[in-house]
Length: 136
Image 1 (tube, rainbow, N blue to C red):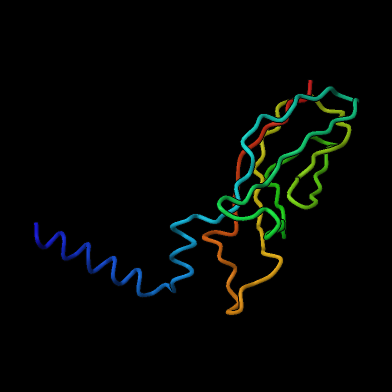
Image 2: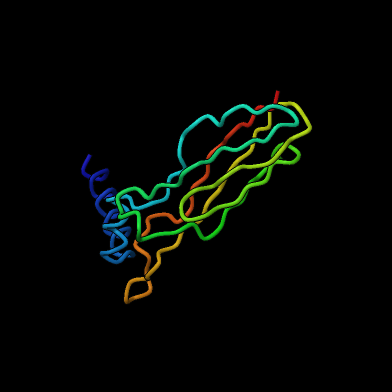
């Protein structure tokens, strides 16, 4: 049992000694982007579609961070495009094809102002989530 505690203690010391205090605090507090968990609205073929997903920054002031990039993996419905502004990803367009379209959205966020040492105080700067748009 002592060997187990010694191994655990050694691991924690090595882990914590390789990180600076701000990084440790950020990861314990958990400053990271989170994509909103929601079901996107269904759309109708050949009619305008619009919905959005918000990005939140857990445990930080909302005004400190912005979306640097958005990636959509897999296919959106034909005719539907995405755009982003501030902390909102919007899906708009007119689809001529019916079906269920599953895709993954991945965001990367950055602070408006980096710390003096160049750090961003994020535990993770990326987040991803699966969404579905159903076109009837």
